[in-house]
Length: 303
Length: 295
Image (cartoon, rainbow over all chains, first blue to last red; front, side, top):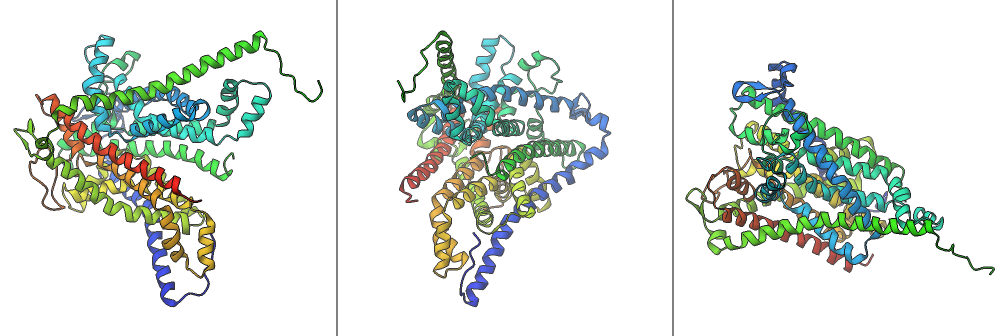
């Protein structure tokens, strides 16, 4: 859009300059906000790492009332819930994206897409409320366990929260595969099914990976639904049957405890310390996802 | 014979391949149903169980008896005010940033840094925004637990959604529109203001609504920045605390023992209806203008 204007009065040149400066400030403010967020997390969180030796900060027990701040069970809890939810959401999301893009008649698409958008719009506290009041009791009945508020129930709710993102990103990735790829495969005598799984999906691989990363980012950062549904027991999730026991995540710990701590206490700094960890983790996940996006953009896309 | 392509006769192998395909498509349909049916079920369950709680008193009344009776009016008002406050901050910065990226920015390392910042902002967990808001707005700037602190926190959280959708809407306007404007002697800003922005407006509005309804439905960022547990009066100033719908739902479903289920479902229903009607409005605007568009 390198269009230079012709004649212009001094006044309009001045307003050009003002407007351009204003929108530039708006654009660069995003960088400022990221830096501010990091600065204030660091300001309140770094004292934790100075107060508490690293071995204790990554200890196995999180008992703030006894001044024991081991974050390992929380970290493992977040990892467990995130991995499980992605394991549920990936096959469902990929299959749905393939169905919507490659197979579904247009009427089915017109029903599916708005519904998935609706899911994206449901506030997490509402999903958490649903998980708590209906899903968890059902889980308890079906699995015959003492409480339905478990890591698995949380993962299930999280999976559905990650699905809209994953589906739409995976759809875009499938959409970017040139039609000629499909035509060539079909002309060679492959069925549509074979074409999808041996040509189209492999060609969309990097986009699907991005979808997984973004879904993961969403899952690890989700707070309210997880806090309401996973039962919040800060124990080490070491074996597979931890899935059907309560678990506690990093996000839920911050949300549940920050309201009650004294400002400036070790507990307060510890919660900010967890915030720093979350910031760094999601930053790296999104960086990885974004580098895949940027790479595609630099190549000018597949199209 | 010549000229006509002979299709291979169906043999056992290809029959099997088509059987596999049919089974496969069946699985895809099942997966899509597994995604969609729970959505309908969640909405259905909340509507059916929440509807009996809905009355004029429930919506427009003050909560009484420790929230176990009465209405949720202060929570509704609080959410609306908070969302308006968010809009006030997020729209100018978001749309301005989008105009910069779509119309002015060249592909420099600095521009890429902005894009990276946006991706990063979009990925930061909502509860971390809450910590940030607590650290900067509530404590450092001394706004206290207030609507201002929450609106600023939510505005920064909403920025990436607004910037990305608005930039996309601006980029969708064909370059020719700008060239013609310039060829008639218009300056760049005149072209943007009079031609590009009006064309992109429906897309921008859609993005703004989607971003704001997400902010309005959030709980984690306002836990420590705005939310009042039980405050049966309307906020008097921007520096007041307030009840909000999402936080109210969280409180009555987890923090108050013996809360009537009906009130919980009723609150969930009101929140759901508010959010989904805005959602529908956004997709309607997008669909309507996409059909009307001449280019």
